[in-house]
Image (cartoon, one colour):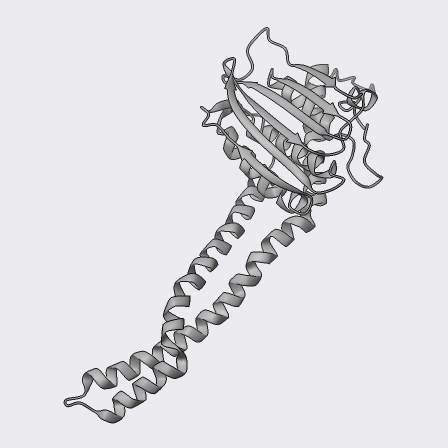
Length: 296
């Protein structure tokens, strides 16, 4: 029996390998951030649960008070005993405090549920099977989504600041750009040697949008900055990162015909500047990356 040799289109095979790498990196991100995401959910769950217990007590007190008010209101003639029971209940239950505290407890619980919802939606959108469809997306919304997923990784080491300009939609693959933003935010958090600041800035520029992720971390010297986009190159300790994050960022930006620029200075921090065309990739364009280093 003769074997049949099947010719594989190199471009198709390359796209398949890229997609596989993209999925693997996303799963690695989710695994690395899982504990932090669980903490982000457990915290509001804890105080919502506590507030529900408080609300349960308030409801029971209010039901008793309402019944006492009814006894006074439904009496055919003034009933001193019913009025005395009502006054005693109001004082015992501290009616003024109950009525003042009730709206705050409800509002705090509502905010907690919103946090849980936002984390769940961000994680659901991030963890869904990656697509390759270019469509109009809100870059600022993708930034906030990535920040929500990375929140627990950031909040203990840095303050996160947003300088987001109102932007028109950008034609891109949303799942890929989310991956880029998450990688940059997590890398910025990991670069902190003491508590610092991470600033995300967006702007319109050259028929496209720019996204800058700046940190006040340890920075990079010339040799490191020149290699950060190489596959498997990492300065992180073993077990923390795959060394594929920035290589994947580079590939995604190139596929979008965008640009990425890195500026870094040892001891003063790093800034990643991204530029994406509003209309998505155009024939004849090529993504470019550069780096500069002010190390002295």
